[in-house]
Image (cartoon, rainbow, N blue to C red; front, side, top):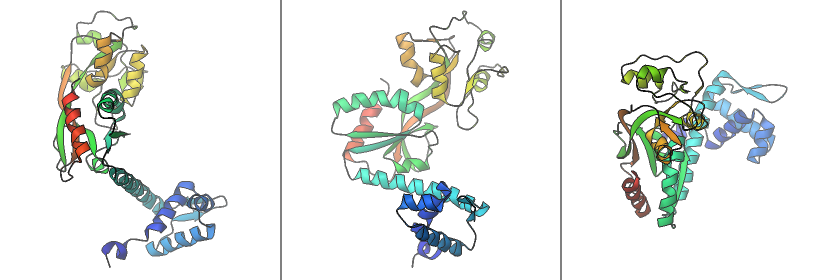
Length: 299
């Protein structure tokens, strides 16, 4: 008997546990799983006996996770979602002409999607699906054929090819009236749209100004967002000056819809890379997509 069979509860009990925990109800979970409420109750009881702990508090209306149940639910729900994504990817992989790519929302919207339009015109027989995920990391790339990952370019499990360097400069809508800016102090005094990057790996105005030797703190009440795409939309609406990542802002600047504010540009030394598992051989379609995207990345 394998170590999984010896030490893990049956998978169906974990699936049932996840459904009950998510719905906070045996009845709703039973409906979702096409089981009787009695069958759901028996599976949860079997799981509790296996783990030797109570997972739910039975209440007048539904159920509530115990502390132990909540801890288990956090793990089980995450792992079941990952398993589902892997199975979905493998099923899609049965079609040699289907490719999945994981990247952040900003990269998907502003960089990858326009290029996919061109790729699809040249290769209509290959389907490329984008999976946008701002929480992606090295481990999550394994669930897809490719990822576009930000960083220094060195990941132990991944082969990486650079796509575009990280360059960040101040931008504003052409509709926003601004004075001529020639000094950093003048820039800092403008209505700067703040980016709260505390929950993820991204620079903000303080980091940007520090690179150029100026200490900066956001004024009280400054407009701010926690996502690049939201900040960029605010810039486009003329609500202030924002940090502009070149891969997002370049097209708007070229069209005259956005203006660079000042001549400063922070070349961070980081980049976005097209990555895939080192030990996974690319399909013919995957290799074609890889080579095409690398060749056309600068366009």
